[in-house]
Length: 488
Image 1: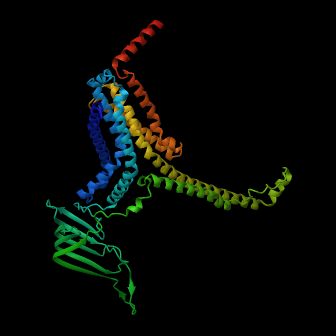
Image 2: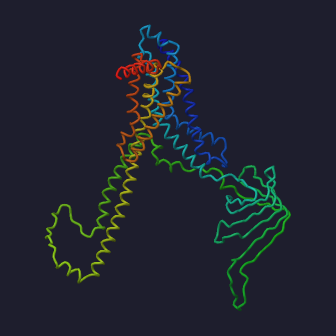
Image 3: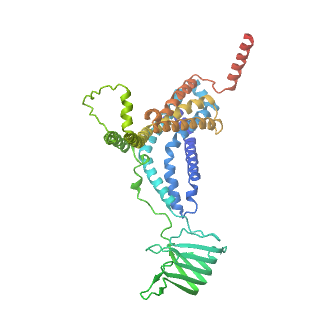
């Protein structure tokens, strides 16, 4: 490796690693802001929170790599141009294409790494991350009693406290309703009133303990509201009430329903984001066969909605043309009720056929969209890797043209092209999923649009273009004004 190659590569890796970390951090903050309501009031320990951040940081790597390559290559050649190192290389007989050769090889290597990562690591990270996120969403909120409001998230209990002391343990004015969770009994059969108490969990946090002081326990037995009579005709008492006064009462409640319960990850493997390239290809073929069989079965099930059916291989029957005349009115006058019945029957059959056709069309469209999604994800395994190379093709010549390093103008230019890539990708995906365009067209739309732009910038950089110099446009504007004045 020559010293020139070492200089270029050394200037590249620093901004690349820094930019990659920053972009991953930004996407993680976006994730946290989107799901912040799912994380609040949940008993999520640091280990679980760290796991979900790790999994989703891996998910953002294929998206972050193009922007990191774009910005770092632009900054690398921008710094070389700003300090006239590119000029020195050209004066020594080294062309710009030769100066870009080491980073070209690096960009191809990063593209191959992006394809491997997107095919092997990303499906695994998606499966782990989204399954854990689902478990966090379905987990119940932590126990949080508020003053004057009934808390109903504890199975079998409704709890209200008048006042919570600052220590978070001592409570005043407790009302506890106990609801039967098993059996046929329903309603509030037991209520506990206490003047004060304490609330805490055991060492393993598996049980919640209420120590109540100076109160009463009211219990009801039997079936209230039902009047019955004995064999002698006297009224029987259907319900019995019991009141127990206490000075100290300990109520122990299980916290089994709280916390995160891991779901079987196999339930999430149906999604296209959780599959590698070979699995996507196999699943897409299966979905296409299923779509074809479903389309053929619709024709068979639709025959029952037609009164007359003709075989496709048989010749249509010869029907004699009926000429209009006065005899039609006479036939209709003899059977008016029969005509009305036939009209209602025909209308009902037409409505049934329309409903059947509409439901089948929706059914087949959804199946077709599923095929489109799997095909689109198959193409994205390649498009995201190719976009890394295209971003280098844009960033490296732009840096040589702008001749500005640092995080000023290069960051602005990089964000513009990355937003363009992102918007084109989302637009192509939407069109492909809705069936508006052919799936390969939607998947490759962003790369097809940006690749000629990269070639144009490369051509301009090789010819030492002053594309971003203010003086060029000032002189061109002055010449245009002079021509307009002469024309007038």
